[in-house]
Every structure is written in C-alpha cells, then in structure tokens.
Amino acid sequence: MTAGINAPGRARIPVRSLRTDRWWLPPLVTNLGLATFVIYATVRSFMGEWYWVNDYHYLTPFYSPCISESCVPGSSHFGAWIGELPGWIPMGFLALPFLLGFRLTCYYYRKAYYRSVWQSPTACAVAEPHAKYSGETKFPLILQNVHRYFFYVAGLVAVINTYDAIVAFHSPDGGFGMGLGNVILVINVVMLWAYTLSCHSCRHIAGGRLKHFSAHPIRYKLWTFVSKLNVRHMQLAWITLGTLMLTDLYVMLVASGAISDLRFV
Ligand code: FES
Image (cartoon, rainbow, N blue to C red; front, top):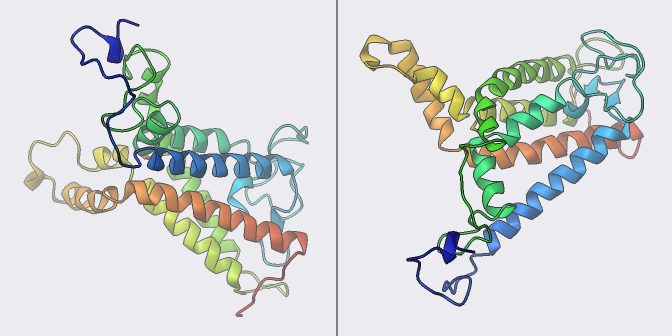
C-alpha cells in the first residue's frame, strides 16, 4: 500500500496505534448496540404477529401504518389500501424503508458506523485498515446527501405514530382507558419527536441561510429550540432505539398473552 498510513511522508510505526487506553471499547459498544437493534427489528418486522392489542388498541411502531389486508382487524388506522401481502414483505413496509434511510443517513449514525463498522478510522490516532479515502464525495456515499428528504418522511411517520399513541387510550368496553402500555407508547412518541426535531437538517430548515436573525424572529426562536435539542442528538439517537424496542416488546408480550397490561383507568 502506498496510501493511507503507508503513504510517503507518514511516520513508520510498527503497531496499529501507540495508544495505551481502551480505544477499542467505544466502537465495540457501538457495534453491539447497533447489532442488537438491527437483529431485533429485523426479526420483529418479519414475524407477522403480536403487533396489535385489540382490547387496548396498542399498535407497535414497527407495523405502523398497517395498510394491507394482511393486517389484523382494527390495526389499519388509515384503511387497507392493498390486498394480502406475501410473508416475506413486512406489514410495516410503507414506512420502514424511509425510517431505515433516515437513520442510515443520519449525521450521528454515519459517524458511529463509519468508525465502528467501517473503521474509518476506528478512533483518533488509530490506523485505519483502508488504503484510500474519498469521504462522501463519490458514489455510493454521496447519496448520504438525501438525508434532508428522509427527514420530511420521518416527520410524517412521527405524526402517524402520534396518532397511534392517541387512539391507544382505549378501554375494552369502548371509551377512554389507560394502562402502562399508554405510558410506554407516549414516552416512545415524545422521544421520536425529540430525535426527529433534533436532526441537523431540521436545524438547517429552521434557521439556515439567514443573514440576519433579527429580521426573522420566529425562525430564530425555532432555530434556538432545535439547537438545544440538537446538542443531544447522539443521546436521542440511542434512546429512541431503546424506546422503539421496549415499546414493541411490551406490545408483543401483551398481544401474545405472555403478560397482562397494567391498567390504571
Ligand atoms: Fe440525525 Fe438528521 S442528523 S436524524
């Protein structure tokens, strides 16, 4: 190799890094966290059952919106637009590709998986295994620029998830009801909004390309609000992976009859 760490002019260091701390730990933890979510979400998305609790109208976010005739009665809040789906197509197929695209192109996740999965570089002062580096200037990584468009769709899905959380305040006798599932669904949706609104594209939409904030007081207020969330974007990215899994797990356990929902009203 004549590029990367072997390029002319680079110091000849026989080991990968001279660092003596546990520099490998953060990428390892990141890999384990991402792998846990990917495996869980994949299994659940293709499972095709235990996603709807008819008594309480709990719908897992992994199956929302459910728009096919394969969806169990009651779970299609926006109607069944298409016929039966073959088993290899997840019932949440409408939103899942956009949500996946939103997360894959997210500025934080890019940093996370470039370092931990692609090892480019794994950590500061740790040699990367790749000989070439073209950043995000070439195909396919140049496609990361579509992130801003995924943001709009993710906003729409957050509205749908909010609707799902509202209609879940339902009692088996009809009318208002509330249980632990509602608390979990609402926490999940609040966290999803916080993650979505803390997006760097959202911050740019709110206050980008302005020459004078004083001439745009409303956009300045929005930008200030989004900026406060934006500094927590990494934490929100991880929290929402956790709340999504927790919400789905709870709905699955109640829907399958493994546990009963704790009812308050
Ligand atoms: Fe992470 Fe937009 S930068 S969601």
